[in-house]
Image 1 (tube, one colour):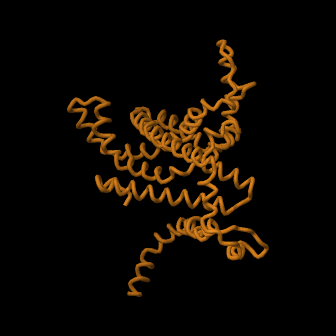
Image 2 (tube, helix red, strand yellow; image 1 turned 135 degrees about the vertical axis):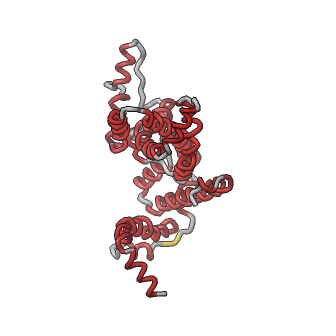
Image 3 (spheres, rainbow, N blue to C red; image 1 turned 30 degrees about the vertical axis):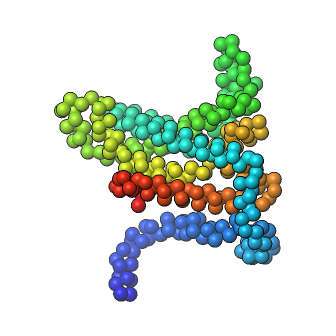
Length: 310
C-alpha cells in the first residue's frame, strides 16, 4: 500500500507542485490561525514571552468576551444593519450582475463589449479609501458636486453627512457601483459556455431574444446562481469594513444606519484594546456563517442536488 501511495505521488508530482502554493496559503492563512480562536475565551494580555506564551498565560474568562456583542445597547442596531444591508447586496447585486452579464453577452461587437466590461470591472480594484474620497467629492456640504447641481436648479443644499435617511440608499448604490462589474464576470463566463445550437434552434422556432433569455439562459444559469448565493449567504454576518467606515467618513451622527458588526468591533477594539472581544466577534460571525451555509445547502440539496455545493 505504501508503494502504491508513493507511486501515485510520483505520478502526479507535477499537479501536486501546481497546487502547492494554494495549499500553503490555506495552511498558513486559514487553518493555522484557527488555533488563535482560543483568545475568544481568554482575557488576552500580551507579554514579552511571545504570542503563544501570552495565550497560555492569559486568564480564561469563558463566554465573557461574547457579552461585548450581545449585552450592549447597540447589539440590535448593528445586527439589523449587517443583515439588512447584506440581504440587499445579495438580492439586488445578483439581479444586476446577471442582467449585466446578459447584456454584455448580447453585444455583437466584441471589442466594444470588452471595453464596457473593462470599464465596469475597474471600480472593483479601487481602494475603499479612494472610493470614500470620490463619494465626498459628490456629497461634501460646501463644495460637493451634488449640492452644486441642486443649487443650480434652485434646490437647497443638503448636509449629507448628517442626514441619516439618505445613507441606506447611498451605501447600496456605492456597493453596487463597485461590485456588480466584478460579479458579472462569473455569470458572463457561464453564459459563454452555453451551447450556441440551443439559441439557433430557438431562433428557428421563432423565439425572440427575451424568450431565449427566459427559456435558455436563465435556466442554465440556475446552478451557478445557486452556488454564488449560497456562498454569499455564508458571509451575511460579515460587513465590508471599508464600505461602512470609509464612505460615511466615520460620522457619529450616522451610526444608527451605518454601524455594523465589523465597524463596531473596530471602534470597541480601538477604545478598549480588548483583543479577546474582537476575536469573539470573528468567531461568532464564522460560526453563524457556517451554520447558514450548511442549512441553505441542505434545503437546496433537498430540492435540486445538482445545484448544491456538496
